[in-house]
Image (cartoon, rainbow, N blue to C red; front, side, top):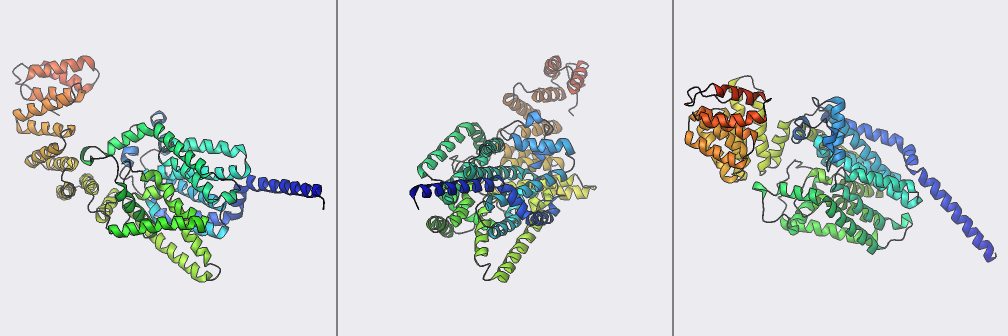
Length: 590
């Protein structure tokens, strides 16, 4: 055959191959869904059954601040912040269904989880065969470590960010295979949404892009320059720090202030990573100690290091031996990396942080199930069923922990008994339960439980001023003013800036007619907030009660001129006009 004919045949093959590639990729997602819709429907039905008992869970923990006690929850304008789309998501639900019931928010989170599982299936199907992908998604959907992100309404940003990142990765792969600009446009669109959902964790797309490129360059039929990828990732990290620095700075200041202040805003990496990596692996595979606050790290240091070195050794080994296993192993912590930065912007370990990364662990398990599937199908099927039953039961029971605030904090105190936050929160919970009691005996019982909770909190962390303040509030409620005063003063010893503590002490001073302490406390809050309306009002009321009527009148007159339409100020001003300078008819505090 002549050289001309050979060249012609090669060109024809390249054209046919190119056409086939384009046809395959244009309908790639559609074909995957069409081919596997029955499996995906069954998977989604199983997930719904698994999380059904989470749907009637109450608002708990951070849900109060972000939803029920958030005055701007219905405002689209107020949602425009660094986490715009995460806030907008809640605002839309609140405007549609209100905030009296938590069920719409739970249903929305479950829908997000279903979408994450479907998009994860599509993503894995672009690289792995059907059996591996199906087993991986079955295991992934049953992982108990996901409950925090799914059953807790405040875990929604992690679901949304994971969905966006996976969607970006699907479009990235399709773009690399087809070179069609529409996929690039979709990457930019979803990338923008991801950036304004969670600037920190949305960055995992950049890291995972590098992982995909170096793991599947043969399947993607592209040439990879590792130095270019490294430069690109480095540039992206620098850009993220530049754009997100105000957010990072504020977060660092908020978590590294007061009683949480330490000598450095950085974790010790020789402690952080040998502690966090084994803990995350254990939580994914053996989820025995699921809790909101992970503070119990009981694995010996030498064993932590052994696990870390074994993991890193496996990553390096499979880089040379099997790129698919390398990808799965690396995916766990590449996806989790933004939450594991050495800067103290996050908890050392939190289950929601590893939500997306756990897909890598599910993929590894699926690969080994698939490896023995043909030879020992029945045994593998029994093993997979048993694993799902164990994980599924753990999910259902863990959902119960998230159904009420009380369940949550009881579980957290049991699993993390050295967490001062957990004990402080359970003390606050017993305080709220007291309000639901119909008898004085019942109220006192709950108040005593609350006192114990706050006491255990500062027993764990002796300089935790908030726990002292909260316990003092309970003493005040049960009329033990002596204990309330001493406990408030202890709180101020550790945190002199507790404004509300001074306010309550002023009330005690008035009740005990302790003029010396009253004037001292008034002087302190006046210096703390010299132009504050609340301070001015409290000062006027207090001066009036101790007979300093002229001082009270001066302050009331100034407030009334500036705020004549505020009823409380007008009432105070009017009442003081009828009081003589001797204070014989002094106004009583509210």
